[in-house]
Image (tube, rainbow, N blue to C red):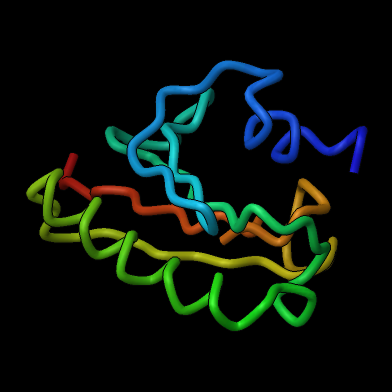
Amino acid sequence: MASCIFCKIVKGDIPSFKLYDSPKVLAFLDINPLAKGHALIVPKTHGEKLTDIPDDELAESLPVAKKIAAALGAENYNVLQNNGRLAHQEVDHAPLNWAFQAVDRVER
């Protein structure tokens, strides 16, 4: 979709700090991180919600979240996926928003 920010990042029209890139999935650091290591894992197929994404892209996404968490040495973290505005989805591209967010949680 031409106006989707995640599609523009996937196509390389908007630069990103890539953590993982395959034919099906792209992981990159969030430009406005909630915490150290806040990453987004997006399927390369545009879809607004989880149900719109092909199963093979979904199957690759969670292992990527696991690799990112391990690489960060994160012990306490969230992996989130929001579907729809009421569920706090901000971008209409099912990333794990669809973006998996792997965020290391540390005590303050």
